[in-house]
View 1 (spheres, helix red, strand yellow):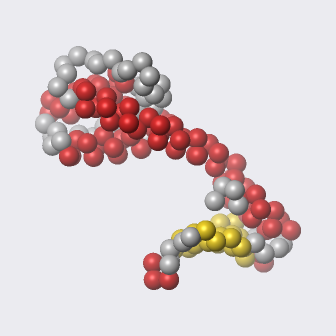
View 2: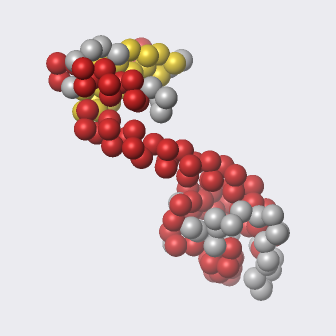
View 3: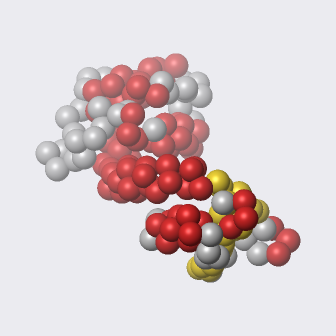
Length: 150
């Protein structure tokens, strides 16, 4: 999608029609309204979103940042999984490996995991337990807590 945003914005600016399809994803312009229509899915399950030109410009501006955050999340996910498994039976803070992602606040993560382990209940992990860039880790840790019945 990010590679098509500049062309879509340019087409809307000029009043031209722009259309692109990639699998189940489609994007085309409704130039009289300066709007792009993003569609995902096939016939029965099709969902569409209408985005105005100004919002498309903002999306094009922040998209590289979102892609960067997703990349960091993907890179750090195995490190967090390994750290969580290593700290389950530990009462003191466990040092992460030297090559572990530096985008994670491991000490805070350990404290939250320890609290969850001691309570033996479903845990709610504060968003601050992981670096703000990696809020999706919260969901992963909650999932681990449910699977491991913490």
